[in-house]
Length: 60
Image (cartoon, rainbow, N blue to C red):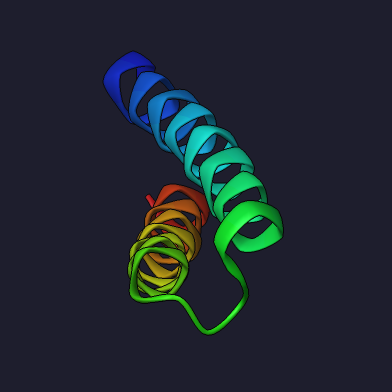
């Protein structure tokens, strides 16, 4: 149980960090820049992972 919560916390922190990088890159280089898009895709994957793990936690 503790490791699941720790995992969720780690994912949340990673999401916050990638979101900050994506926003900063988007402001500096533009929203259609390949680096901004890379961060956006990574952010999407992390958010989906967080949602799935949160659901699993609810049903375990």
